[in-house]
Amino acid sequence: MTQHREAVAPAELVVDLDALAANIATIRARVAPAEPMLVVKDDAYAHGLVPIVTRAWREGVRWIGALDVTTGMQVREALGDEARIFAWMLAGADDIADAIAARLDCGVGSEPLLDEIAAAAGDEPVAVHLKIDTGLHRNGVRPERWQAFVAQAHEYELAGRIRVAGIWSHIAEASDDDDDVSRDVFDTAVAAARAAGLRPQKLHLAASAAAFARPEFRYDMVRIGAFAYGIRSTDGPADADLGITPIATLHAGVRHVSADAVVIDAGWNAVPSTAANQVAIQTPAGPRAVNRIGSDLIVCEPWPAVPGDRLALFGGSALESATDIAERIGTIGEEIVLRISPEIPRRYLP
Image (cartoon, rainbow, N blue to C red):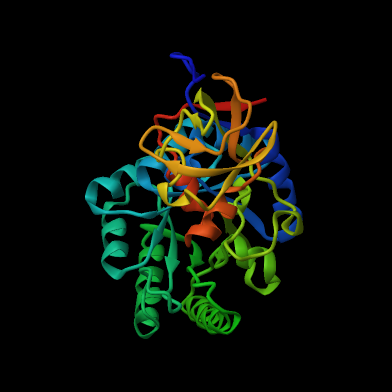
């Protein structure tokens, strides 16, 4: 006989802040003496911005990578005056004015943006990080224009409009050979900037994977996003090899039970529909295959469940991690986590 229960606790993402602290400690030891910048784009990779940056600050993280100005302003409100907050997606006069008012470090990857920031600067010079395009073409000044770019930056610095706090770039992380070429371009750009009279405090090129795997890419600072949240690279080293742990677990309740299936109160706002027939969940009776993912339900192979039972669907205490799922459906772990609807509550431990 089918069992029914009308009121089932909704899905929730449980975020373990002690696991975040442990990951930060691992990262700091791994990349030393470089300083880690914690990247918190997309609401801290959907984990919840304010709890994440507050705990990271307690753990000694002093640089936060916000991506956009709105996020940078939220971090400033949460952490106060001492935090260094880096935003590299600025669009238009309002963004520039807000970034200056919030005293954000601004990533600058074009000549017009440098001019606009210098023109908008007030009594204090604006901290900027100049971006060289090392081949990924994710904005950044092309090498053939770099000499003129850094010369103009030096003029603005002498005029008290800006302060060149850093030089930075992205790399593709597609192959070691490609990344070595990018690093050569970066080193040449840094040398040219110094020859033009600039004295950047921070050089940063690597994100999580390169920062862990290749010491020569660490420079003064590394931007750590996914690894801080325990999301390893697709087809990369295992969590245990990296020394990181997923900090969040997605839970949901059993909605109803029949002889043929167990229906879980979650849907494609929690787990991508393409994961059906690709993944399993751990139950008290052992792993059970996920057969269908609808808009608000997940249908699994049966076991002796009871409506209202809670299950870990993926994450730190579940059978599968976000990257485990990603590897099976041809995406990356970040995409799985970012697909979790903001309407699903977040709960924080401790």
